[in-house]
Length: 165
Image (cartoon, rainbow, N blue to C red):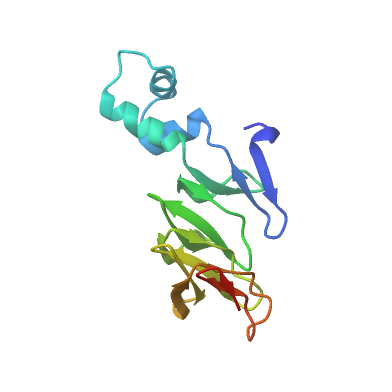
């Protein structure tokens, strides 16, 4: 893995990395040459194997600073860790994992933002925004067209039908 493929998250020492051919082979249980043939669209490869390889090739996870996997490359998209949680995407839905890769809040949101210092996060589901706590419980049910940054637990800017308050 070369250094250009690694993004260091300085807050927790875990690195987000692009997956290598060897990683894909290990995850899919096939040889490196099979992965290479799938990526290069070789005609002599089982379509099911090719799909599994190509799907794995577009997944993200985290490694530690020694290059060991901390969180397997299983996510379509993944955010940086903020207050101990990272946003992850699975099948076009977003949720949260902790630094060990444990799913804390299952992917169910169309959009979710990082948890702020007050342990609250803005989420969007069914085209409406709400606010959840770290347990995934709604403090504000999804009802607004938009919600601003949560900088004060008592006052949060919201938008509803082009009106702000």
